[in-house]
Length: 180
Image (cartoon, rainbow, N blue to C red; front, top):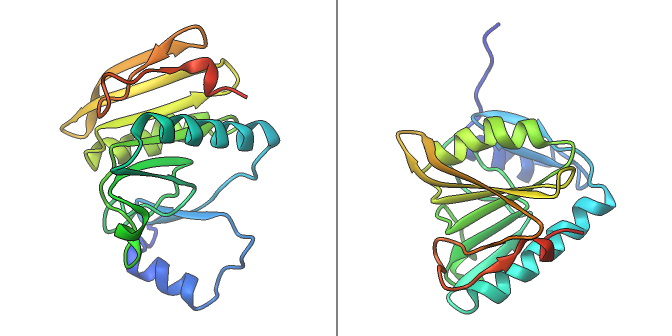
């Protein structure tokens, strides 16, 4: 059955027109409006921990955005759990960012979606580094170096290990610091 693909502009107009309520948790991915799962307490705690850790690693010159829109392409405006973008917050006063140093999703009930559609969309868009913090297994899945729409490098880190973001190779983050 054919489906209609919404553009980012159409989606933003629907939001502005009040078609969705303030409690609706939605995002646009590949032209489809996706209903996001409600947040459990462990997920919310992990979002805060990841955001705090990445602020410490990246410092000035980068902004850590938590669950805010990101302009991936003309048909995608996801709201990654954590996005590290270049510049300061005022750089995005008039438009959401379209470039990222790193995107991170916290996965509990959304692991298949985060490893599937989101991974593919982020790779196609050339996001240089994508992390999935899998709460069930307490592992960090790290995807790097997108090429021809796929990530050519994948690493998995346990809670006992650390990771250095590509954009800050001398700064490490213990994976256990990201876990609730």
